[in-house]
Amino acid sequence: MDDKTKKSLLLYLLTITIGIIIVLLALIITNKAFEFLSNAIGTGLISSGFVALLLLFINNEENHKYMKIISTDRSTLDEKYKKRSYSAKEIDIMGIALSVVMKELATDESERLLKHILYENAKVRLMFLSPESEYTKQRALEDGVTEKDLLKGLNETLINSLKLYNRINKIYNNEYSKKSIQRDKMGTIEIKITDMCPHLTIYRTDNNIAWGLYTAASKGIYSTAMEVNNKQKKIFEELKKHFDRLWDNSLCYCNSENSLFKIYDPNGLIINENMYSKLLGADWRKYIE
Image (cartoon, rainbow, N blue to C red; front, side, top):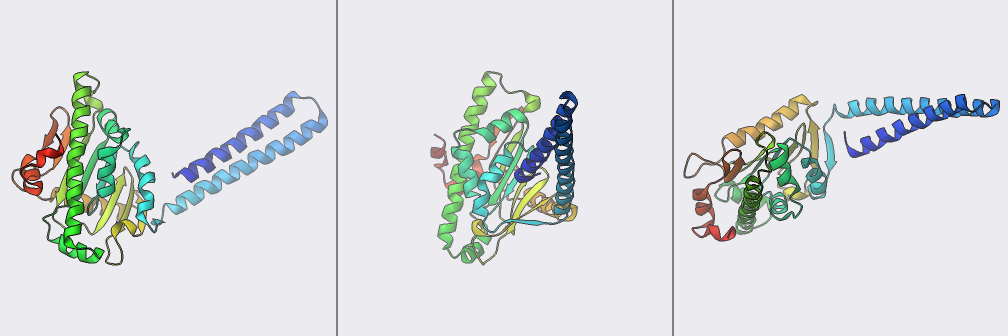
């Protein structure tokens, strides 16, 4: 249920409540004229409130049958989906570079999502394109930029992932030393890169998926975004399986651990030093010192 629907629901419930109060007043105040007027107004508000509620639920169910275009510019959705992630239990995010998402996580002073992971059992998976993928050449051409510019953006995301690692590592160690973290409430965060073409961007929060195609018509962040939920079972499951398949077959460099880093209790943070060294050079540690 989106914010607009929630506001409408509260308004209609308030209308019904006011109607009931007015009808009850008619029973308390013994005045024929007041009783007649109160009953008329009160029952009218109750009836209109119930009719509005019925129409709201009918329209809401009807909307769930179809895939919705939620924006013709994905850059306008960042704030909306950031708020959704604060309450979601499962969060999957995939894109070419994830520049905005990774920078937000690395610099957000409120640390709200990180604390949601550590304290409220949220499970987060992030995946973006490897700088060594053959697809970088094609995507740079489609975006109208040089491959060097695209690789620069991917390297910035890698650097921000290290800053995120540093940040969450400090929070984890600090809270763990104070025994503030409860193991049964701690979630996970894992970041992977893939050398496969992602084809589309995905932002899943529990049973909702915002997604959009990568086309040669415009940069991904300025492209149309659509939304489905698990009531549109066929396409929802296909999108979820698409993410899962790429996740399971993502790039593996130097060892059996194919994540950039991940955190889960009781092992804390695990960082893939070999992978960062290969991608950013032998001095990659300077980004977390």
